[in-house]
Image (cartoon, rainbow, N blue to C red; front, side, top):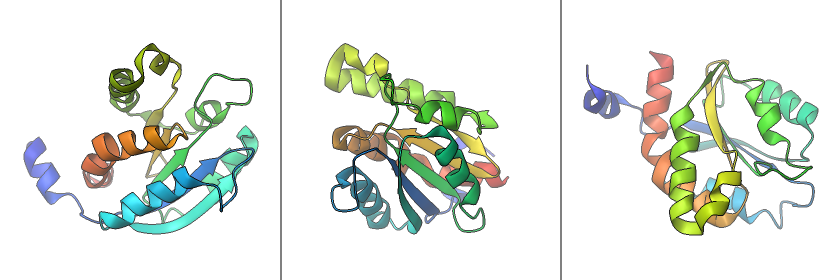
Length: 166
């Protein structure tokens, strides 16, 4: 079975949890998390949970462990992917990934480069698999969220879940 047949058999709807990593955002000010939820719902995906958490690796790891695998097939995390002293999401996530989807980060940075130029190299967007779930970590800006969701995540979400369950 080829790539095209796999995509055709992929689920149209997936179950997704959304996590915003920020030291300052609240539910009222989390426009990026809300954008992810809106784009997922507009494309027929189910939201199984929404969390805002501080950029503390231990807290992020604990939250990832506590999200019920039976409910969420995909976890999308926004924020904490830069290189500042407080940006530690990549470290927390990279330690729990069993397999990385290297192309995600590579293509995201390429697409970002086309929009924002050379500062795209500082993004540590990453995706992979952990405990039977797809985990995707993207920057927290609305533009980055819109780019990642429209160009990479939504077109491949069902296909990634399909491949993971094979």
